[in-house]
Image 1 (cartoon, one colour):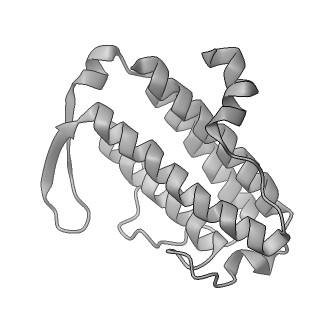
Image 2 (tube, one colour):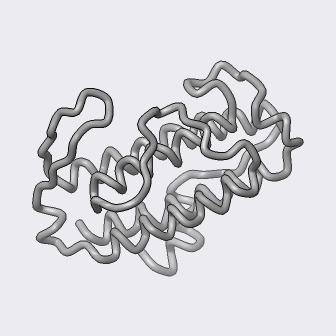
Image 3 (spheres, one colour):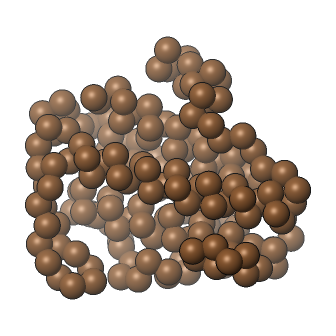
Length: 170
């Protein structure tokens, strides 16, 4: 199970890099065009994924800053947003690398931000949700990039496995 989550942490960083490389080529105002996405725009979506990752990482580790609102705009410019994304991806990679199989089979508890309930759940399914959430919103970012620029990078897990991932997870 550890190798599975290590692969998803590496895939996450790889896919985010491709999305941000494509987003950085857009005119700055294009990030904020209302495209009818769940978080309105490409910029809103990229901020949301970072916000959600920070919330989950605080839940997993007990450390780090976490916004209270899922639609918080942390950065309006792609440069600082990308820097923060890369730092969070490194944090995720380190966190997963430090997990043991016992950790993955265990439970963790956290307090929800919205209604202050204490939740206790198994770690492995929570990590599966964590990575699935990122993939879901990267799909929205991919659609936004296609609409805004006419093209978007191929983000399929198979492409990662055939390139960078193949050297590590073959």
